[in-house]
Length: 128
Image (cartoon, rainbow, N blue to C red):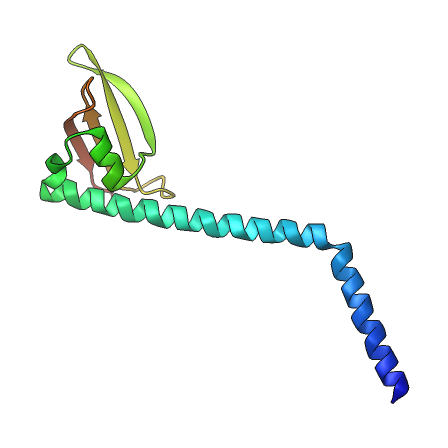
């Protein structure tokens, strides 16, 4: 019996030493898992906001969000911000789509004037 207890103590000590020896690797794996969980939450939140934006465009209530600030507060950051010339004038536009679906995604373009007010929008349904 004494030998069994001694063997168990040795196994426990050895296992503890192995865990300490690889602590940095274990901490790195934990950090990667935590980052992935955070990324998944960000993607889920973005896609939920995108669904709300699609609803606002389809129902015509997008006009109730007249400027950049109200758009950001209600629908979050766009995937891309860019400019293009429309009627001889540089116009800022924001591009929204599903966060990780690059192809076959619905798309929304929001166009703003120089003072940051929403001028126009385009909505493109996904091709299925």
